[in-house]
Length: 144
Image 1 (cartoon, rainbow, N blue to C red):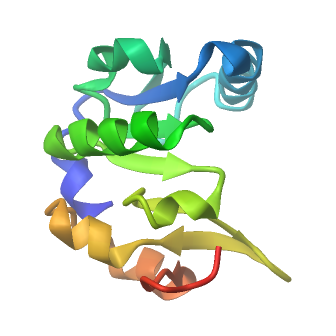
Image 2 (cartoon, helix red, strand yellow):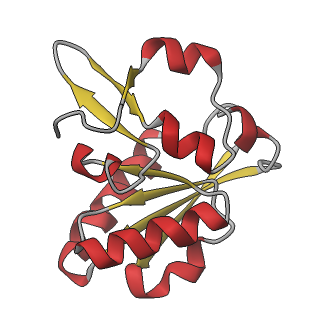
Image 3 (spheres, rainbow, N blue to C red):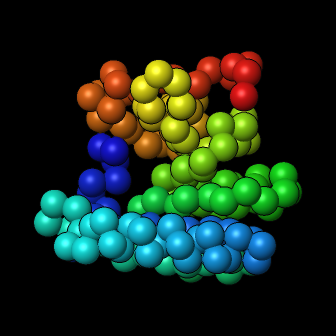
């Protein structure tokens, strides 16, 4: 992400947002990330924040927020707040692209990023051209 590079100094902060129901799954995801990247990515340490949707303010300074499933009201409110704070949003469910999530993964013959270019432009985020070229681009009206 071109525009997020400027906010990263010594660490990449990733916020994992979830409802109470997904607390164990979120903790498991954090453990897997820490086990697979014990030294961080490139020269950057990883700071992983485990947060409930009700404590979203913990994510304001993050570069990326991974959003677990929640109700529509929570999702819309969270996306609006995170966009206001220039946090790149990602979800595992492509249906949230319609709500304005920046990216998810497209599972086809190959797994590729599925980018919501409209949401990214609206949030003032720039994406590296290489990432755009390898991604599937979401267009409003695409089926979920």
